[in-house]
Length: 258
Image 1 (tube, helix red, strand yellow):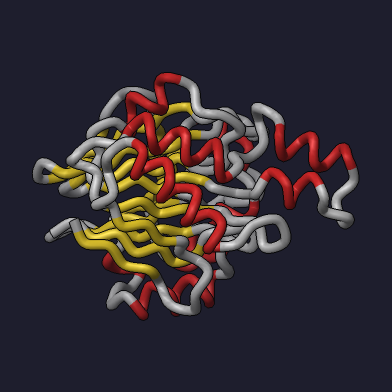
Image 2: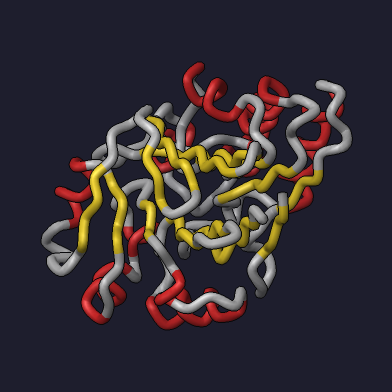
């Protein structure tokens, strides 16, 4: 079994549960401890059943629950050293397990490999998780897609990629000042729908079965716009078979089984 459950995705919090036959790991913990515990329970998982938490970067919408859950239980947290250093004062009780980019490591029955993503954090990463001949690539919070991320996602069975905003809606948004818009559009900001679609077109293969569009802006995007854009690019690549979802837009965890 290889199961992906997106517990939350967006500026208010991010967390993804990945389960195998004997292993459950969490990618990020950006919800409150109470809400995250409830979301795990909705998937039939308790904290005692989580073998580790993988951290993409230190921003609060990816780490909000860590201090609380680390204080009350023994929990293995996996991060690179720069991300851990950025979090140490907030999470003094953490049980750290350090990894290096592009060097596979094991968490239970999963093989995990981290890769750099361009974002405004200490040392942000995405992950490839492999088991039993299938793989899941997560690449969120990135301003553009360099070749090594295309390589990391090529051949994946499922991909979760940021599709943050519609370029026209962002440009015309009256609530964001020009400086904020420029940061979002920068190489260390967030991907637009068209940029995410172009990435999917590059990695589209018959092996790709599921695409999860992440971190949608509430003001400058919609599930319909993001999905239509991704679908157009995938169909241009001859991969109309791929299922597309925007997890985080509904009240319950979104589940994919590979």
